[in-house]
Length: 375
Ligand SMILES: [Zn+2]
Ligand SMILES: [Zn+2]
Image (cartoon, rainbow, N blue to C red; front, top):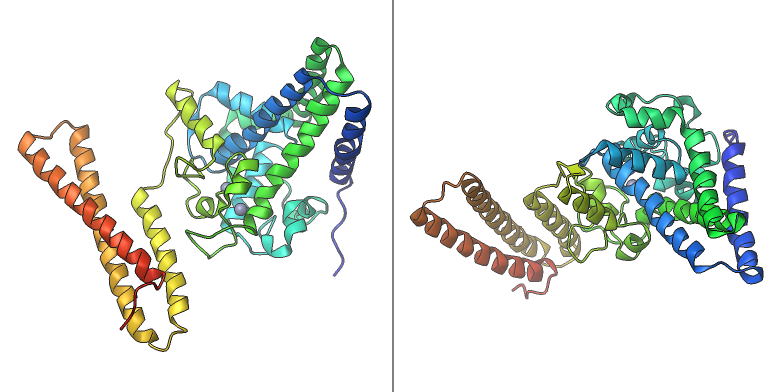
């Protein structure tokens, strides 16, 4: 089959910026050197533009996991343009297709099934999806967003002004325009490009699958460190409407911290999270699936499978009871309806259910890892 036409503009952008970053910048560093202001500015812009993609393009616009103040939107729209990954509208349209048809090579624009290179950068080098270049029918909501449409209309101007104007101005203030554009402009751009591309490539190949194995997305703490928290991609693909990707406090997710932090000063609101019960149940269902696969190879498979299923059912029941009671307490508290007797009783029940759930979880862990001796 004939390959689609090459997209010369994209190739030139990647090759020229890549050569400057990997050859020009090291050469400049050895011969002229960069000063502290240039290095700090680069780091700040790396985070600012990278997180405009993750907090803005991705979690705000593609998935609508929270609402943002117009000022925040404008900043994210400019920062995102500075990361040079096409307009919000185009990016979100591609990304919604990616979620909807993940791993389907003929539909997913950066399908992991077509390999690491293709999902990282290859998909942008040829006109693989030229037929739908202007079809934004899956982003009708975004077409009503003034900031999105403003950025889409003036995309190129914003890209040029932000990348060269801003870094040029900062360089002029610091006494060396060229050196600043080289490091905080081009080198930063290439770095943001590749770390965000990792989310489409490496985050679909490398890591664990604690929540689902129906698609190739993985959870990976190391990758999260380089992708502003987007490395928890297995969680993200199953709970895409959650504003968090790393849900535990110890998981590195600066994008989540930024969104949450802004909510304290009223700049973001309506942060959406998936109920803990659903998250926990998905994880346990995955453990059951894995354990069943192992059990099927045992000589007494049927018997072990029965025990496994019983413990699983028991755990599910205990979870339902626990979360129902928790919800009841929360609701009553919200309405200030707790009378003291009722409160004591409910609190007691809640504690009991919690304890029983903890014990069942411990038992389940042993059973599902086949550590229990089956007679
Ligand atoms: Zn997504
Ligand atoms: Zn993905």
